[in-house]
Structure formats: C-alpha cells, structure tokens
Amino acid sequence: MSSTSASSPKRGFRLPKRRPRSAKRRETTARLLLRRSLGVVLLGALGWFGWLTVEINAVAGKDEARPADAIAVFGAAEYGGRPSPVLHARLDHAVELYREQIAPLVITLGGGSNLDKGKTEGGVGRDYLLANGVPYERIVAETQSVDTEQQVRRLAEISRERHLNSIVVVSDGTHLFRVRALCQDAGLIVYTSPRGTLGHIDDYDLALRYFHEMLSYTLLRLHVNIGWLHGRADA
Image: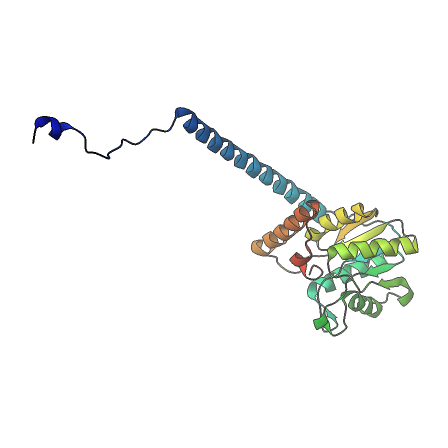
C-alpha cells in the first residue's frame, strides 16, 4: 500500500460539528434566567411563609375579648355526642366569657358527617352550654357547616338575621388568624379569643398546626377550593 493511501482519512469519517457560539450563549442565558427565577420564587415563598408565621403567632398570643353582641365557638370533633378535648376547651372558654357578660348570646358552629349518627358539633356544643348554665334562649346552634369556610358563611347569615354588629370568635390560637381573615372578608366585625392550652404541645404537633394553617390560608388567597384538605371542620 502506498504512503499516500495509508495517510489519507478513512472514508465515511466525519469530524463532530461544533455548535455555533450563539446557540451556546442562548442555552447558558436560558439556564441562568431559570435559576434566577427559581431563586426569586423561593425567596418570595420564604418571605410569605415567614410573614404568615409571625401573623399567626401574633393573633394566637392575644386575647381581644371585649363586650360584643355574641360569642361564636368554632366547631371541632365530637365523639358520640360528647365534645372532643379540643371542642371541650373551646366551649369552656365560651362559658367563661358568657359568665363575664362579654355577650348575651353564644353561637355554636359545626355540622356532622354520615358517621356521626345525627350528632353535630353545633348540637353537642349547645348541649354542653346548657349543662353549664347557659339558658336555651341564649344559644344558637348552627349544624350544617363542615369546615371553617362554611362556618364563617353561616355565621355571617346568622349575624344578618339577628342584626349582630360584633362577635367574639373562639377557637384554637393558631386557627384564629384564618378565622379572622375569613370573617373580615365576609364583612363581620370580630374579636379573637383563643381557648386555653391543653397540656403540653410538642414541637412537632405545633409545627403541623402552623403548616396546616399556612397552607390553608395560602390556598384560600389563591382561590383554590380547600374542602378536600379539611374534610370536616377543624379539630
């Protein structure tokens, strides 16, 4: 074989084509923009949830109870006609406020499910108040709502029917920030009053409560239907 044929390149061999510099620049710019966008979104989310944590904590730590037209107790679970420990604590706080003559009327909120055999959170709350000395004519039991949003809507309807101008709302401290926001959206004048603490709450349970409220409030402001998140009224 001649030296010329030995040194010539093999047939069919092609050197890899280099991509144009402009294409590389466009790809690099796109990646940079994506990273920056993700960074902005992350910072925005951190700022939003940080602000929510501060606001939820501020409302949870302050009792605004003052003379009003009614006291509204937001529902929580009931078991076979008996209030759960959480609902028990909310109702006890409402009884205290009533005895202090904060308001002449107590509204209990919350319906039930098919598994409750006709029992409702509002009805159980009414029975508990009766057993603790609140007269029947001083109690309004709302028994149709299944979550916080529905409870607020029913509370607004009751307020219009009875010409109530101001209401002291009772629930868990972490729940009250969202309750207050929903009530204000519904045109209600409310004062928040958190129930007493039940024993020791560990950090994990407290973190779950904050996460639940932050997620619920965020979805609310995004106008996302969150009925699936709760299933029933907040316990």
